[in-house]
Image (cartoon, rainbow over all chains, first blue to last red; front, side):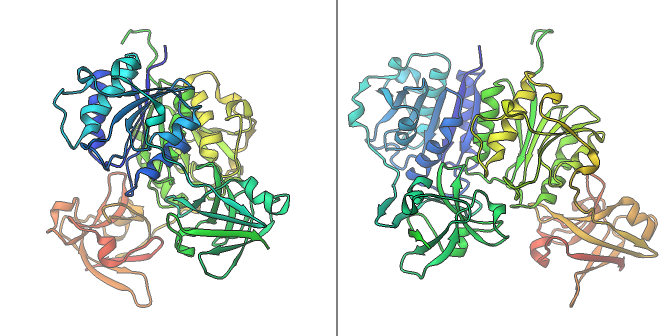
Length: 272
Length: 279
């Protein structure tokens, strides 16, 4: 039988994730842990949710542990979700897990992590539930503990929702916004290539668009399949394979720096 | 471990993807195909698009790895006509990545290039491939199949001649009587600066150097920076904050500040020319 798989995402930075990995291996030594990201740059719940959403289809079926948890130690619930594909998601009930759960086929069952026997210590700290509650429960699930044992069932309708913003087509204008800026400075925009195609009834390499950032003047940008299709330093609109949707980038440069783009920057696109 | 048990396959993995999860997605693809793989992340914060930095780091790390399948992706030409390739090394490793100069330097450090193949067998790729993420769609799954043993190197695609591989220009050092002319090849996270050339370059110019022998270093031109330095065998041989010229753990000529960043202090970047004379 294949070793249990645990993916692991936090905003903890460098060393706290290692403490959590130690807890996981103490309970489930055979677990294969894949660190998705630990906040190489500071990120919020939506960034965590977006990274998890973009990555889970490529993860093997397993336990996905995610902790971006500004509400740690407050009334916010700790949850485990069973997903249609067979995965279990573990983390805080703050929306972080919801887009990934949706992408893997939807929630089959939700439970509140109240069984202290599965915690690392029944007297968990108030500020490090990653170590004390989430990691040990994830490890027990990876080791084969049924999800019903983690605590009472919850009505999935009561879970805190979180949506990833979408794009809107108005006439021949696509209204979108920056969802995520990656370490290259490539910007993932809300929406999909078919939204761009809808503007002109087709979408071919070399098709040109007028892109406006906020109230700035329009820039002429081509649609291209990959970065090397434009000269070094030139902008392109493309299908962002990493983050599954529309992207704007610069060949061997940073679109974020060039255009002054940050999360939630408003971008409008129309055929040139 | 049972004596009959196969050791877990080791996959070395290096990219310039950063820490946003793209490398993790590739690891997930490898683990989906080969759950037993021990993936060792060499680094994912390679300077963006810096093929030579990637090649340097691979050459630095891979000789210390067990023989395995190793994946490297610094690939500004992703999705263009550049070929995806696999190189079998003299030692028995397989290196997987783009044909842009990244893989030949580490292959030379692993017993040389024994065989090269173009990755063309789509049965070893993800079912859907994109033009901007071959790390996930082509390199990682091919490496996963090779590591798991369900594909052999011959299965990845047709052979290509090693002579047809893209090679990076190799920066060179020149040694004259009392003079080394060289160039910055790599700046590490400590701010230590690697230079073209090695111990033999220093010996050819200066004979036998002893710890503390003064050297004068001229960096760049127009006008050059002058640094009064000295030869030393290790950092602690000079006072904290002082510079030294040394030979690094791989035999490369190098310069550093003891407990400081020489690169930051002097504003040293890649490809800067360097002249070393007696101080």
